[in-house]
Image 1 (tube, rainbow, N blue to C red):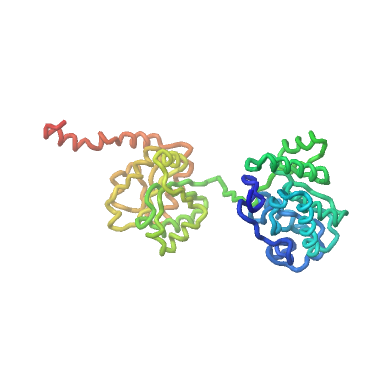
Image 2: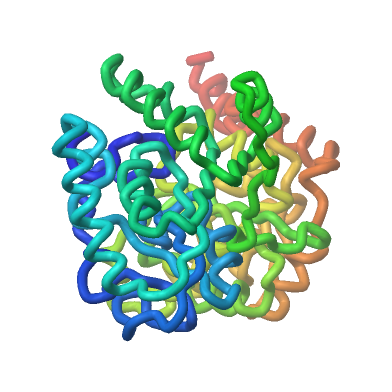
Amino acid sequence: MPGGVGIRGHGYSAVPVDTHAVQACVGIRGHGHSPRYCPRVPDPRALLLLPRPLEGFILADQARDLLRADGVVAADPPRVPYGAVARLPQPLRDRLARGTARRLLRTLRGDLRAVAIFHPVQWPLASALLQARPQAELWYGRWDRYELAYDASPAMRRRLAALHEQAAERSSLTFVVSGKLAELERDAGREAQLVGLAADSFPAPDPRGAVIAVSLGHLGWRTDWALLRGVAERMPELVLLLVGAWHEDECKDDADFRWCRAAPNLVWLGRRSDEEAARLILCADVGILPFRVEPFNDAALPYRILKYARLGRRTISPELAGVHTWDRAVTTAAGADAFVAALREQAGTRLQADEELRAWALEQTAERVNAPLWERLRALGMA
């Protein structure tokens, strides 16, 4: 577990942590101060020891909520990662923890009442803090069975189990995310408070009226990025699945392309196999053909129209002459406003496909569309 806490898959970084929470108040959070600098905290009462910087902490939403309280501050990981300290022999581990605690407490002057940790590897530092501030209590947050981490060696698992027991026995408030974790603490003769998880910062677009569209194929010169931008800006309920390779070299100087690359409701999925693409079309209400209106595109009959139709999805296209060949499957729209209106008409189709359209598309077999060629072959005595 080199560099960082090293418990992968549990919200920890696999790269070295080099934030300096224990020096000059860098990394002390709370009271509206910058996450990277603040003056001495006036009267800290509770200290959250973050196992990762807040932005990457799995319980960040709950930590931010607690930081709203007067006197609650948080410290980023120290220069020497918690996991590295936990692997040291106990005398060296305790010595290093005491030194870190002294530096941290020089910043945190005040009547410290609580120290919160979120992983057993933080127990050595928490223990040193509590020895220096015996009036404080320990809070121990547990969101996983850290001592059974997949990438921990048998020796490290035993050490994590021992650190967990020490922290849990000292804890005045153990809070856990699942009923099973609470049950494990009860089985060990300890009490735990079930708190669950929060995901306040995770986006929650309104699913009512959402329109899921799919674009299949090349994303480059032919694409009307201004149209896509206009549609996405006007239609917050849109989710557009972009299935196909995109070509930065063709569009890097296009401001609308750059906007589309950053837009949250445009989901760039890259090149996919036909089997994958078909399933993605099933997830959508409608297919789109976002081509520029220009001579190169005007006469084309894009394959994607038929592919969408084979799954019961119509295509919405700009006004291009070639697409009228398959009027049965295409709705044309001139401009972003008309495109938005056409998309909204298709909301919910993913739950009830157009079976007549699907039947028509499945009839467009190679043998059927090649009928004029077969007639010519027969005329030439070749069929």
